[in-house]
Every structure is written in C-alpha cells, then in structure tokens.
Image (cartoon, rainbow, N blue to C red; front, side):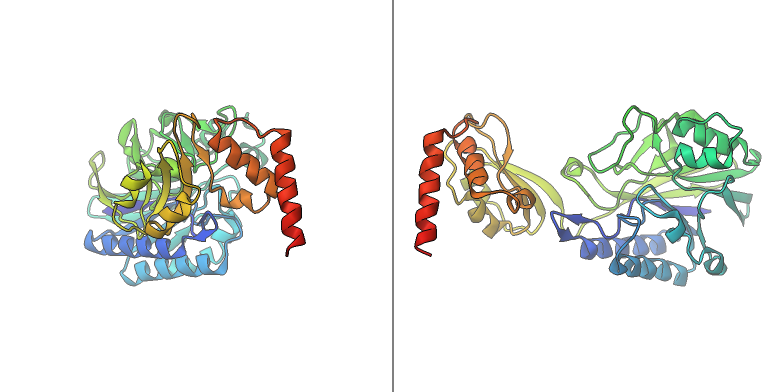
Length: 373
C-alpha cells in the first residue's frame, strides 16, 4: 500500500498582512497531482490544517475542494487536528464523511481511534492521534501520572490495543526530541512538549506533523513531512516536499519524497543597492539586506520597484553594526513621527539616540508644517 504524507498546511495564514491563500491553492494542486501520479492509496494529513482554530470561510472552502478532488481520485484521506486547529471543528461531520473514505480524528476522549485497511500482505492499522496536551489526557485518564507530553502520549499508547504482528501506522502531531525546528512552530517553555522517539517503537511508520522542515528523526520511518510552503524567513533554506511511503510486508517500508514548488518563493537577498537592482525582477517574498555604507533614504522604495513583494528591508554596515528592520510596516503604523525619526537617526548614526536639540528642531518643523496645511 502506498501513502502520501503531508502536514502543517496552515490554510489561512498571512505574511505581513498578505494572504497566502493563492499560494496555498497552488501547492495543494501540486499535491493532488502527485497523489495521482504516484498512485497513492491514501493521504495522511498530520495536523495544523488551518492557521487558527476558527478558520475563515475561504480557508475552509480551500480545504474542502482539496479533499473533494482527492476523494474523486479514489484516495482515502486521514486527518488529525494539530495545535493550531480546533479538534471539534476539524471533526465536524466526521461520522458522515467516513462513507466517502475520509477519516478525521475526533476530540480526544481517552482512546486513540484507528482504521484498519487491507492489501495483499494483510491488515494495516492506521492510528489517529490528534495533538495532545497533558491536561486533556489527565482528564480522561485520571489514574495516570501525567505532567508532560511524553507521559501523556505514553499513557494513551498503553491504553491502545496495538497488535505488533500487524503493520501499524501512526499519524501524530507532536515535537520529537532531536528534530530541527524553525521560527514558525509553537513550543512550550521548559521542554515539556518533548517526546522521545523510542515512545513510537510499536509503529512501522509514524507520520508526523508540527515541525516545518521535512526530516526523518533517527529512522527513515519516523518522519516529519514539513509544511508545504515556507511560513517564516527561518525556513528560507528549506526544500519543501511530500513524503511517499510504500508499505509492503511487515518490516518492509520504503520512503521517498517529491519536491513541492511555490507560487512565490520566500528568500533572503543581500548585497549593495546597485548589485541588488541589477538582479532580475521578482515577485518572490523577500527579506533584503543592503550593505552600502551610505544608504539613500529612498532605498526601500527603489528596491520595491524591482521586488514588489519585499517584506523586510534591513541595512547592515559598519555604522549599524547589526541589522535593523527599517520597514517594520506593522509597527510603523503605531509609531509617532518622533519615534520614526528616532529609528531613522539611530540607523544613520551607529545606534546613537538623537539629542534634545534634534528633537526641538523636529518639533519646530512639525509645527510649521501644521501651520501651512
């Protein structure tokens, strides 16, 4: 049997107030094509379907269309909720849509759900484990000692009737110790969400979600699919992909990946202003860092002509000593003229604050401006 493993769609996510729905639709169309080309029997979606627990209508419609196209191709679908999802909203109509071959994890009530599939080599049991918080598990298993995510997952697995003679697949949305993270994931302070990989030894393949970089964790069959798109600049170097899992007889599992290509890439660019302007026009989502010693005041505007989707603009030279985001579009709206002047003065003067004389000159200029308008 062949599975296609994806995760962390985060439908409805925005970057700098820019909707990514068109980008997400573009990559979901690729995934449908890959499922068809690879002749996958089922698609495993390992949590964080939506960016927030109350998704907007457009995001829900996008997911509905995605799942519907897969069902029309004869694919079975398995979906669990992640930490960004509402378990209740994700599982709405779950009983009804099972008849279409769509299996959705329900809100956790003490037991893991499972679905048994069958092929020429026998049974394959697919287990659905939505994102769990220790408090949720403790509520339903009060006899267990549970303070961490690892203890929570271990308790749930102890209460599951897992037949190790069969082939077992787990879909899970948790943080496995040793995995490589980025800025996009939400982690618990103190490491209480860490789970050791050995906890999942009973499973022939573990389809993980939560971490955005595609990667295996200690073994090929314990794997994060990663997000299909780059959702922060810490992911700029990621190569996004979908995992294809071939499960043959017990103990024989092979994994390969198919690359995913974005509508707009998310990249880091740096160089002198002249060298940057010599680059080809691009509508990618960019963080541009200029290294000129003397940066023209309109440098950002100049660059935006060539790079209209520039999201961050920084200057790094001997005077700044460190990158300072002088775009900061979200915070600029809430700053006074004096605060904006202070930011600009620090940028141009080695992080030195403007003095009282400078402030008086600015205040005078503002008063004169008001009088003439």
